[in-house]
Image (tube, rainbow, N blue to C red):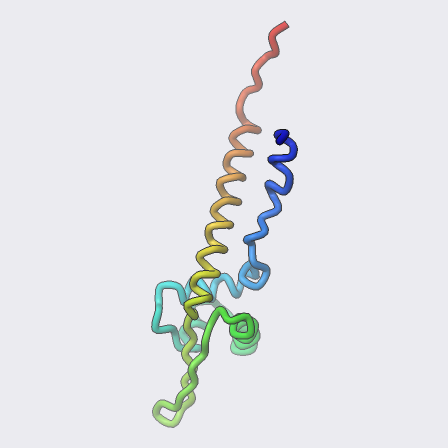
Length: 123
């Protein structure tokens, strides 16, 4: 296999999941990652700097894709929604982070190669 064939698709980054990659959803997943029991909607809204409507829409997308689960219950006569990562969501997010780490590694290598002094060719 030639070098060119070996590098085909090298920078395609198929593991960068479009559902996760959106900025607000990425923030939601990071916030939920360290909290296996989940977070109340209001706390998630505060941590991610989102409005009620905006957060609701992003949570719906994540829930439809199986990344998160939402539990609703009454507490002191008020509705309390708690959001948490599902086990498949945690795995998918872990895979996404591995792909993102590859992007960062490739970018660092490309940057280092571009700034390295070029060697004069032997004549």
